[in-house]
Image 1: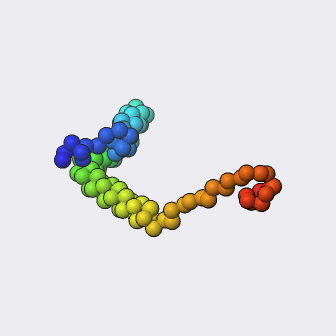
Image 2: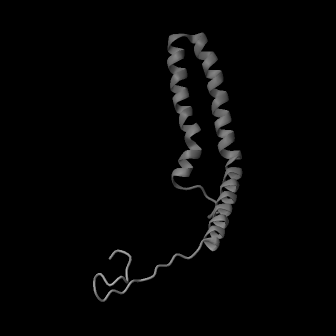
Image 3: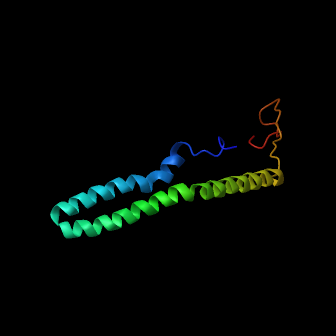
Length: 108
């Protein structure tokens, strides 16, 4: 069961993008700290808060996001099945023509 619920591929990267942005925030903090020590300390405080929230969302909310995605996919599958059951079956009537222009087909 856990193997089926693992996050794979591009969805995993989608869930990790706040953590990737944390690296940019750390670089920003270093640049601001190089210009002004006081501003660097203030920015580092907010960077730590951002990294903490990003990690909390990734580790604690991942299960809820996966549960929501599974529920969505099941509802989509059920609605698609219902639509296919209600849809009329398309058919066509073949025209057999012996002679052109004898009126047995609509185009001639």
